[in-house]
Image (cartoon, rainbow, N blue to C red; front, side):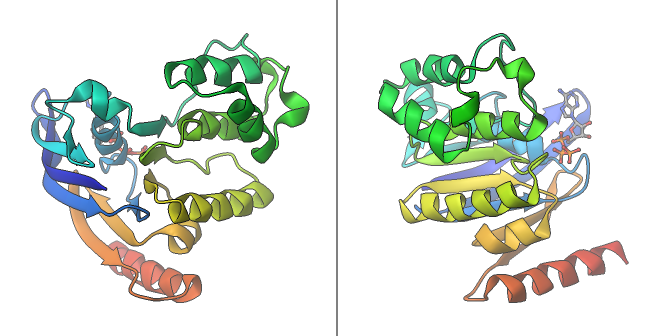
Length: 233
Ligand SMILES: Nc1ncnc2c1ncn2[C@@H]1O[C@H](COP(=O)(O)OP(=O)(O)OP(=O)(O)O)[C@@H](O)[C@H]1O
């Protein structure tokens, strides 16, 4: 379970996030939507422990980011929106490197490589991977240790339609295992398939939060697109 409690952020004079709160239970998914500069990455950086909140706090399974940082970080997996690794590492070396911090066995590294369709690339250097393959690898790094909360910044960027479908199915499976997921996207169809709650952000504020109360993905997408268009008018 994740609780975001009155979290805010100021960059010099500019407010990037006004105080707001959100909550997701085990196995639930929150999706953040909103235009460029809305504050999605800023919020995800705070939840991932990369950037300190200006005010408020984040709790995962009652572990407080401000007071139990080490324990908090062990409960999350974070996929950034940009690649950050040594590009001369191979796929296996990269995942093994991150796996050692969490005591992940080699069999799990192998399993993740397989599930993410990277088996034929396992000994290739990261610099030789396509954009979509790098995205899958970054996702693998976040998911490797089966964290309590998975935090993903625009995870479907660069994925082709086949891998978007695989990714949606995988997220649903991960939710069923009890993991809480929070991710940002510009893709309403992805949001409609996976989200229990879609949060629209604008200028660092939540302008609307829409819960999926038993709608199927198609109905939910129509609802989301309707709200999205209303905002543009
Ligand atoms: N390190 C920083 N220093 C100063 N301002 C920042 C910093 N990081 C983000 N901002 C500002 O905070 C605001 C929110 O940015 P953020 O990256 O969170 O938006 P976003 O919703 O993720 O956008 P996008 O869809 O383009 O990724 C923007 O106005 C941005 O310029």
